[in-house]
Length: 463
Image 1 (spheres, rainbow, N blue to C red):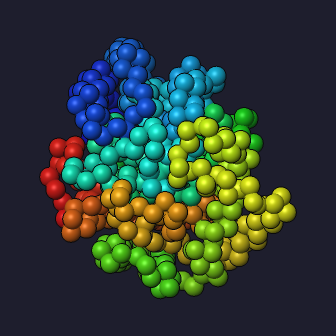
Image 2 (cartoon, rainbow, N blue to C red):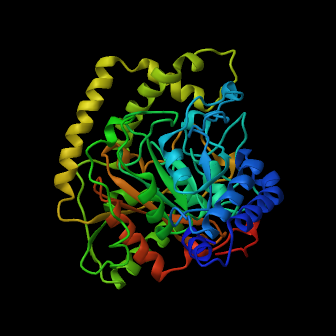
């Protein structure tokens, strides 16, 4: 069940947190040996927290709509005393000395942290693979190991397979949206500074942002309200206007102007992905949105390259010493991405940051009068692992959103003939998560792609 349904059942005493946690742990025990989505599961702690939540709720001391609901955290999010590997075998035994602000917020809301999920090493990769810590199995293909999407691979798989109703991911260039699309769930890439990154292991501090990975847009809106907010430990969160997504969530899209991606960007996109995308456009048109064409001043590939330079330079500054040490067991696909930052001079890095600010202003003018830009999330469905070219990135259609400090929502929007889910990306201005969620809610109210269950989680094959 999605978060908002569980919340209603708990509030009306038809279901207890103890029941929910036990069901999650049962499913993890049954499915996790194949799925490999978790680094650690906190079964004993979760049971104790569920008992405490149940007693508090029954005694009239519920703290909010999320009280008693389990959540998983990507293994970049620190919990004091718990494992914090960052997806690296080098840090396999590392324990966190602090608790991330966002973790404190979900715990304060009464949520129950059930475990930590796998990530690409140092969160540096969109395919979702991890050579030494393990690659989670995309639950839509029981026969073949396919890309789960990264870097928030474990969170995507755990939510899709119904091991947990929700999880936290992080997104530097698509790392919430790619696993959301390839695993058939909903993922919100928040505006940078909307949610505190204090206590979240960084990849690229300029571009990093956490976000919820859930089953529905309504769940994303509920979690955003808990996760967002000012944090003295993260200066970028200070003095911001917080989004209030819930009041306008169900307003529909009538009167909104939604832009198709430029025709030139359709090249290289899989035909089945484009077919699902085009049908999504027509669904939103049928709901009353005005669909318009948009000319952008720069292509997504050019923007992605600039984003990649910033990401690589900052990643090398953070973990370059590990990447340069060939005696350490770093992922063979991740090591060269980090080492590439060594060749970026301070002059080039500062120029990239300056260029980013210029482009933000240019694109703000280009999308003036448009409420959202619609694109596919990825150019292909999930690939078999043997088909992946690790020298490439699947984030061509997502990186530009981080570079320009926008927000983006990924929602399931169809299936290939082979039964693999694909996603629609709804991109809005920075700090306008409310509109992205409004468009996403309207789309999900008219479709049922987000309700489909993967075969490995007990669902029927879909096409």
